[in-house]
Length: 132
Length: 354
Image 1 (cartoon, one colour):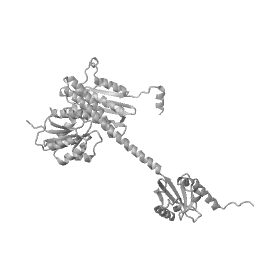
Image 2 (cartoon, chains in turn purple, yellow):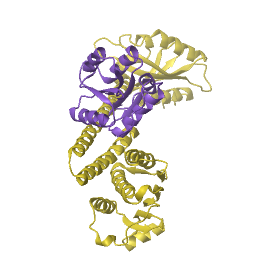
Image 3 (cartoon, each protein chain N blue to C red):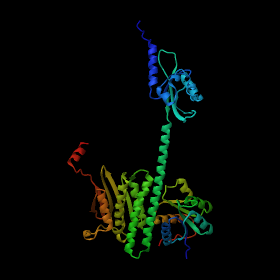
Image 4 (cartoon, one colour):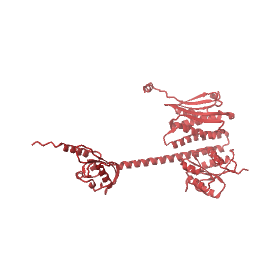
């Protein structure tokens, strides 16, 4: 059996998170979820199998998704980042620093395609998993 | 004995003093040693100087000595000597027991024939209130921008929640038909969302149609077209701007027509293309969705109109347009045409006169 790519979904809105998780799992990924950037950090510290972090920027809590993205980039360089927000676009510099940005509201097909692109661009030992 | 008429230079001087005194803009007439020759009533009133004390007083000694500003004095002396000019010099007038005032000063050496005396005209504009108003205005504009951003953010997030709920429902229902309806509803929500993103980016009330329609079609194509080599969806449009209200209706019409074409015009993996076209000329415009698929069934009158075509009809009517379906052989062209027809004879005549 092929080991599934693990994606950490960070989103404070439960309904958006639920739909994202289930759709990503249907597309063949394994998922972990967090409702805040702080929770996401705790998960990242405990697990070493997360390959992609898909996070919202604007979330309540001690720090936001942009800060999370920068921390991930700093501490776990191999992890791919896909960042989303309904607020103004981040600066080109921000995007270059973090990875991919998708404005809200997004279509999950677009998110999945972006994640596959990032994984394919990487010399990955795991084969890309085809959509169901 | 009849009084003698005063000599000409005295008349000229009196006229000059009268002109300075009556100036609405605060004005000082100075000599080369910066002594006040004349002060306008407006100057005395604005800067609380007793008019009878102004004349003959040194600039530095006016009022409580607040006009003693070394840099100003040297600038004025240089102006009197002819090698400088005071142009929009800004300074703060600092006085005891009074609010500071921010001033803009201009000084010019007077050029006049027949006299060796050097005279300077110094105009003083108090811009304190204007600057304050400007600052307040800038602050309000900034605040408005922040609020608008916040609003866009909330709308985007709400639309994402709605989209998630619809898709989550589609995942859970048993009936395939219901699932398709929920997916259609999701497309409609995303069509409105694409406009929202366009509006958030534009910072204007109006929407550029071409990028909007392109974003819309990209979004529909990404989720509905499996093989992009087999089926293409493109936009040809001019650089028209429309209001947000008009754009949202047009976007929903395009969404319905494109989804309809994708669902019915290309059965059995038929290769083809869909073009969304928009062109306007004055008040007239034409929005078309053209496909080169299998064409519409001939007996379409007998089938019950679906929600999609009801939406197209209702929105076309709302935009004052007519829906025209033309078989293209192969394919179909559905156009919404908005043609301005003058209703009243007088209106036509008025237009003709233009």
